[in-house]
Image (cartoon, rainbow, N blue to C red):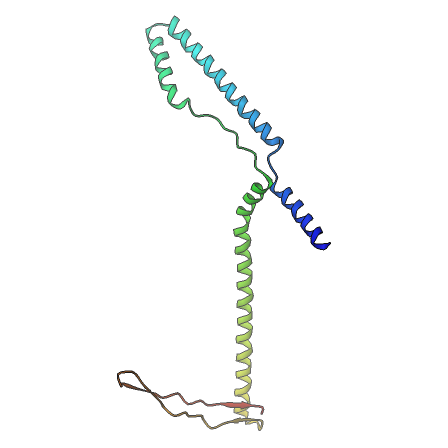
Amino acid sequence: MKRFAFAAVAVSVSVALAGCAGNDYKLYAETQQEIATAKAYADAKRYEALALIAENGDAAAKVAAVMSLNMSGNNNNAEQRVAAPKSTMEQIGDWTAKFLPSAVSFWGIQKNAEVTMHASDNSTSVRMKDYDTMVDLVQGRDDVRVVDPIITDPIIIEDADGNQDVIVPDPVFPIVDRP
């Protein structure tokens, strides 16, 4: 029963978020049609005016009217467009694209600050422990003692050609703190 309820909620949320343009698209199509009609009407009136100028004007006006007709054909094809309506998912995607990088950067900066503070706390703790141990050694407390250094034997490494390398490890000076 829980799976069915979860599936029903998931499907309804998906349908709600996916959405479609609906009535917005109808309005969009009508707007585009009105723009095209207004453009055609304006072009027709402009051609009528230029034709009257070419018919009734002097020679210079006729030349100007013809030049205007010829030159307006190049940029007259530019059509004004209204942006198509977007579905809910497209709008969410746009907002996500704007804010997600900033949110991720902010989160990363916070985590980096936490890691840096933790490293600083650890470093402070180690230094305090080292300091306490040195104070105990200098003051000669009975519960702190220095153990003899641990010296390991040299290690001889031989490669396939018979060449030998000798590695001598550094001695280790352990301090036993409060055994």
